Amino acid sequence: MRTHGSPLLATLLLAGCFGEVIEGSGAGDSATETDASATDSASVTVETDDSGDATTTGSGGSETGTTAGSSGAATTEPVSTTDDPATTDDVTTDDATTDDATTEADPCDPAPPYATLRWSKDAELNPPMFLQASTLLPGNPLIAISEVSNQGSITYSFDVACPGTYRIWGLTVDHQQYLENPDTYLVRIDGDDDFLWAYGCQYDEGGMWGWRRLRSYKYPICNTDGVTANLGPGTHTVRFRNLEGKNQFNEIAAIAGIVVANDPNFDPNSLYDPG
Image 1 (tube, rainbow, N blue to C red):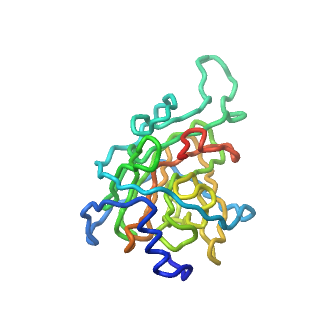
Image 2 (spheres, rainbow, N blue to C red):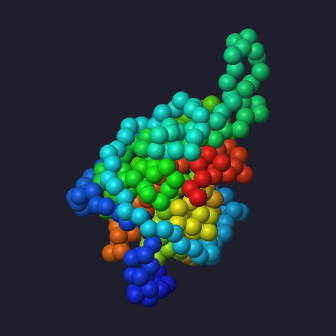
Image 3 (cartoon, rainbow, N blue to C red):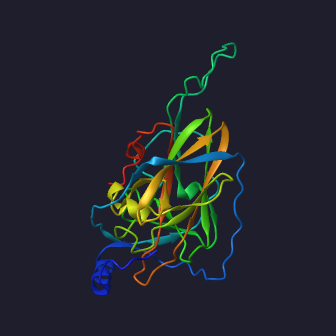
């Protein structure tokens, strides 16, 4: 999505000095995909009282990525957290378990704190979405990219033990603030309808690379509402499809992973800090 916000020359100079430089995958406009199906359903709620505009500015480093192959579906086994996303599996913290078979207490009343990090390397890819190593992010995790507008997707899977209200953050790149470059996804939680996530409106939440909470795009520009998912026990999915393709400055939407948590004040940087 583009607006008339800055002169072409200034944009060209910025693109030449900053940002994730995307190495092409060779995918063409004729590529097709098959959507992943969810195993459970979710109730997605738009929080109309939780809105805000992004107004701050910033800049990032430069890099050239290297292309890597895709991986399988995300693992659901909880593992220990480390600082190297290139070698670390997905991270889950969930205390809703018991070793006492005779207890009658409900482990979900109240629900214990829950947070899980799912990397793009462990998600399901549909072409022309592909993986490429980032050299800007610590540990050089694989990031998911599609050069073709509205084609290709990435689907993350995760398990929850307790029913409740969950919030989702995505680790995304934004080369410029606002909507003057590719920075928008169509998002689907389980089998619900797609909603438009214009994360370019949330530049101030992370700068070039940062954790940004899922929000539903509304007119006027950068009027967004927070999104929550009311989930039951079981496996759930979140699918991202990029709205825009790669622009003339080699800029493109990219996502490295997601965090899902039941604490509205949870800080995704506690699981992985993009710096």
